[in-house]
Structure formats: structure tokens, C-alpha cells
Length: 276
Image (tube, helix red, strand yellow):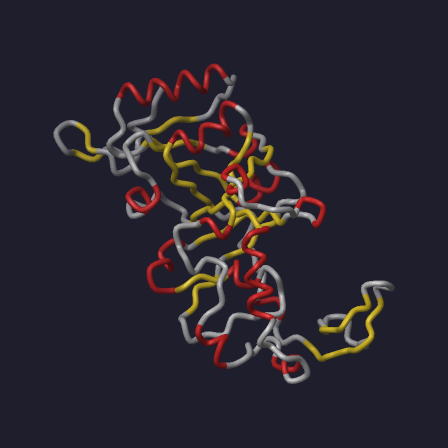
């Protein structure tokens, strides 16, 4: 193999023995493919309350299948990939035909489930209209360390890299296209995503409605640092969320949005608006 312990090599593996039969070459800058922010990075999830309610009432977090997102390009390679191989696998691609690789890797979209979080030290006004459909919605605040503590070990995480259509996404990894999104339209998301990849024993005919999502166990006490209400949330909705918290024996800070309008339009700070 390699005398350099830090070098990542691509190889053809004999599935019968698990041993390499041919070393193809070194992968360039593999650390750039899957990256994580610092553990204290503040994360937010903006969601209609009914979608997030299972976390509070059932201790389960919803993951969406990658090929069922509204973004039709989710998990797909770029036009750049169809014109040239990626730089990361440049030493490998000369020895393998790449024409069949892209559709094989894109087929993994049906076997991967994703849960998305927004990296930001503060609440973001644009995320409310982009990721909620009504005023009965919340923003949940946490950080990366808490996210890992609250979810099962098989759940992985990675930053999303934002690229242009002419960029060639690294093609020789089943998840590489799923940690890249188009810069135009989506860069404002500044996304970290949780990833649940099905094991071979779980992969079957995923063509039923219930297969479009997965509920994963989560510890709400470890996960949620605080909850903020939609800027236009009603008093009745806030009371319903408070009752759900009490029923679930959760002691979590509830705050009005920092963009909520109070007293005829004056903005109050979240601390001043805290729900006691």
C-alpha cells in the first residue's frame, strides 16, 4: 500500500476476500469532502410545528429521503461532472471509465435520509419564509456537540459545500453528491446535514409513501437548547406548545422570535419576550 499513513488510496477490492487487487492512485485532498464545524457551532432548525412535534411527544426526529426533496438536483452531479472528472480523484479517473459511475452514485439518493440544520450564531429572518409554511412554526436552537449526543451513533454529519454548475463534484464516493448543493439559490442556508444511510439489509423496494422518510430516536433534553416561535405566532399556538412541553416533562426555554412585532410594531429582544 502506501508508506504515507495520511495518504488515501483508491483501489479495486475483491469482494470475496476484501483485499485490494489493484491500487489506482492517491486521492487528492480527501479531507475537503466531508468536513465538520467546531463542536460549539450554533445550529438552528426552522420547521412547521407539526413536523417537529414528534421530537417533543415521541422523542423521534424526522429524516427525509434524499430523492424526495423539492430540489430536483439534490444528490445529483453537475454539468461539470459530465464534461470532466473531478480534481480530487484525478489520479484515479484515468484508469477507470467514469461514464457508469455517476448514475450508480446518484442511485444512492434513494438509500440516504437527511435532516438539515442552519449554521448561524443568531436567528435568521430569511429562514422563516423559506422553511415554514404557516405561523404555527418554531426554530429550535442547539449546537453540534448536543446534536451528536442526542442522536444514535450511526447518524453521521457533514457540512454542505456550495458549488457552481461547472464544478466537478468528487464522483467516487456514494455520499459525495449529497454534501454538495448549487451555490445559486441555496448558499444562504449555510447548512450542516445529518445523514442516515441505509444498511444493505434495509435496502429493498423503496416505492411506498412511508419509505419517503424515517423517524430516528432522539433525546429532546440533550438536543434542544431553546425554542423560538414564528414571528407571527398566535398566543393560542404558544400555549399549545407549552402544554405539549409540560405533558412531555420537558423544561426548555420558549422565546418569541427576535423578529416578532410587539406593542404596535416595536421590536423587543428575545430575553424581554421570554415565555415564562
